[in-house]
Every structure is written in C-alpha cells, then in structure tokens.
Amino acid sequence: MTGWPKFITKLLSFKNQIFPRLLSLLWIALTVPFIFGCQLADNRIAGKINPSQTPPGFSPVPAVQSIADQIFYRGDAVNLTPTVLGEVHSYALTPDNLPTGLSFDTRTGVISGTPTAATTALTYSLEAMGPGGFASTPFALEVGYRLVVDSTGDTLPNANDVALGDEACLDADNQCSLRAALQEAVALSPYTVEVSVPANTYTLTSSIQLNSISNKIFVRGVNSSSTVIDGANSTKLFYLSAVNTNAQVSYFDMAFKNGNGLGNGGAFYLSDGSYEFTRCLFESNLVTSGRGGAIWADPTNPVVITTEQSQFISNSASSISNSNGGAIHVGRDDHVLTVIDSYFSGNTVGEFWAGGSIGGYDQPGSEIHIEGSTFIDNGKIGGGGIALLGYCTKDLTKNCSIKNSTFVASAQDNHLVLLSYVAPFGSPQNTWRLENNTFLSSGTLSMLYSEGAAKIDLLANVFHNPLSSNACETTVGLTSLGYNIDHANTCGLNHSTDLASTDPLLDPAGLVDNGGYTPTVLLQFGSPAKDIIPSDQCGTLTDQRGLPRPIGSGCDAGAVEMQQ
Image (tube, rainbow, N blue to C red; front, side, top):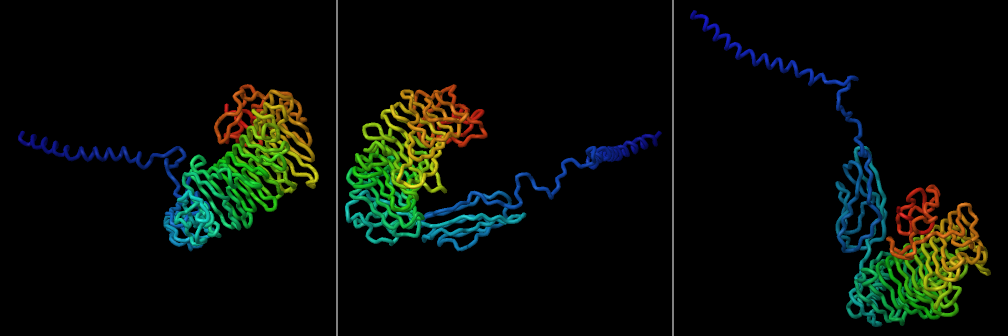
C-alpha cells in the first residue's frame, strides 16, 4: 500500500509536464494550415502586389507644373517653387547662369534670393529627374526695375527727372513725381520697369510726353477710386509714342479724369506700340476740336489697344464736325482694338454720323473685337447719333467681332451700332461677326444700321424695342447664321432657326447688376430665346458674365445664359 501513493504522485507529476506540451502541439497543428494554406479557389494568395506595378496616380516620369514666365524686380525677395507631379530625385537648370543674387537648389528645384541687377528676359529649361526618366519645362525669367512715386507735384521744370537712366527716380525737388518716374522708366530700356503709383490725386500741369518708348512699362495704381490722374480740364494727360509694337505700356487700377486735349485724344494720344488698360476708369475727358474723347490712335502708325474690366463714362468729342469716338477712336488698317468686360456710358460726339463710344471712321478700317461689354446711352450730344461706329479692316487675314455684349438706349434716341463701308475707302471690308448680343432700345431709331459694302454675320442675337418697329435700319450686307430673334421683322432674317416678329421677353428690370464685370439684361421665364441653340452648335461656351453655356437642353440667344 505504501507504493501506490508514490505511483499516483509520479503520474500526476508527468501529467503536469506532458499536457501543456500536448496542448501546444495541438495548437500548432490547428493554426499552421490557416497561416500557410489560406488560398483562393484559383490558388492565388490574397492581397499579393506585384512590385513592378505602378500605383495609380504615380508618374514614373515627373512632370513639372506651375512654373511660368516670371518678371521679378531688383531688390525684391524671390522664392520660385515648381509644382511637380511624380517622384523626383534631382533638378537641373539650363542655362545655369541666373541673374545676380539668385541661386538654384538642385534638390528642390527652388530659385531663391534677391536680384541685385536688372536683366532682359532669358529662357531657361527646368529639368526634373525621376526613376522613370526626366522631363523639362521651359520658362522665361527677367529682372526689371521698380520705381515708386512719392510726390503729387507736377510743377515744371522741377517735376522732370534730373538724371535719366541712372536707375533712380529723382526730380529737382528730391522727390519722385509721376512725370519723373515715367521719364526714367523710358530711359531704362531695354529693361522692364514697374511704376508704382500710391493712392492719391495727381493733377497734371501739362501732358506727360514719352517719346521713343522701346521697353515694357507697367504703371500700377491701387484702384480706380483712389489713384487718380487729373487734367483739371486744361490739358491732355499723356502723349505716348513708341518705337514699334514690341514696346508695351500697361496701366492698371487707375482713373484718368478731366483731360482736355487740344486736338485729338482728351486723355491719351497713342502712336505706335501696344497699350493696355486694366481695371481703369476714363471719366469726363474731352476734345473740342478732334476725335477720341478719351483715347486717340494716331492713324499714321500701327497701334494696338486693349481695355479689360475698364469703364468709360461721360467722355466727349464735342466738335460739330470731324468728331468721332466719344471714348475711343481708331482708324487704320493696322490698328487693333480689343475691348473685354468693359462698360461705356454717356459718351458723346458732336456729329450725328459718328461713334459716341467707339469710332472707327478713318480709312481703310481697323481690326476691332468687343466681348463681354456693355454700352448704354452713348451717341450724339443731346440725343441721337451712333453709339458705336465701325469700319472693319479690308485685310482679309483679319476680321471684326462683337460677342456676348449688351447695347442699351434708354434716355437717348440713337442708333446702337452702325457698321458700314463707304467709298472711296477702297476694296470691300472684311466681315463683322455679331454673336450672342442683346440689343434693347426705347428710342425711335434703329438698333443696327448698315450701309455701303458692309458685310455682317448675325448669330444668336436678340433685338428688342417695345416702342418702335425698327430693329435694323437697312439689311445691307446682313447674313443670318441662325437663332436670331427680332421683335419686329426688319433685319431680313431668313434662316430657318430665326424668330422674326417675336417678343424675346427680356426682363422688365432692364440693365442691372446680374453678376460679372458689367450690368446685363436677363431673360424672363418662358422666353423664346431660352435653349434655342442646340448644345452642339453653341458658338460661345460662356455668357457675358463668364457663366457657363449651355445650361439646360441648349444655349440661349443673347448675351446672358439663364442658369436655371
């Protein structure tokens, strides 16, 4: 009996050692098949990724983005960082001779530093190297001068720059007047120059004359309400003459008021060169014995004029003879006028057969393009006359156009647009294209007048005058391309998609702010102009306000695309 307890004790001890081992072996036996043998029916291991595949959105060959032509100014801090799509190991810049004061980081592609000297534009190539190869993107870089006006004085001769071309704006009063800054800017050619004009009123004692301009000059104000150049009703503001059309003078965010030109051009007399006006206001400028109440383009030289998001209000060419272009006058075959998102109101001329807002009377006609703009009550002093008169160039490689624009005559009785070509100006002019415009008049004269050898294509325009049966005075040269609406039946519309003797149902509120840069006239609900143009035949992809076309089953006729 004494051996039995010992046997039991040994058995229990063996159990305590073996059971845990057996349990461990059993656990391994149960789990190993799941670890090593979990397979799909087609024997592919779930979740396996081939290392040679390229993940979606990854570019093995990098693409450099968001690096464009750049103008920096001497003394300004520079940090030009490219945006790159894809993996990049290193960067290279060709050529590697950056302007003095700038450096290039081959790891990040960043160009940084503070330039200490001006340079003309040089084209570079930025190369980005990645695992799949390299990509290069060209861009131009230049360093110009910046001059800051710090005086409103314009007493002559003190306001003149004392040392032209010395890289500093300094007049005889040890200040930088507007006149001195612009004189120095011309002298610093061939380099680009920015002239910064702070908020203030700068009253000129005589016109600022800049001759032989051969570089790019950017004149920047704060806005057209606070940076004002004033002629005090006694002088033209600017006389600008360039060496050629490669020269460019651009004005931004300024107002030009009360210029009085003896001869042509109340605010600006422009000869040769390219001139741009962005977010500018021209108001109450006058010529009493010439043309171009605000702007005149010299007919003896080529001139390119662009206005964008600008306003022309109450400018006038008031002579009862030989006046034209209450706001702007162009009149040569190599003149180019582009008007974008601009507003013309109350501009007048002394003659009936002239252009209250824009005049292009001189032979042989100019290249004119108008888009996204509004014209209201422009014409002859006291009423009547022509709001816009245009002779299109006879150069058959060019054309003229009015698109997505609104013409309104409310207080005056005037023709809204006169497009014509009359002997002895030579061979027939090129074609005007009028597309997606709205014409609204409460006067007794027609909205569109053509004569002579005029050639005018009409597409998707709306003509409405609730007080008169005249939409078009004559049908000379008019060709319908379709989808036009004439409240009367005077435009000779003969396209199968035209609607003559049809009320377009314009909003009775008339010309109001409906968004965009200029006021517009909406359509009423149920207007026949709504969706009249099939989507695949829409000529313009946005309306006057910049909103998309088409909305709905097609595009609307007129300047505005209803957004519902």
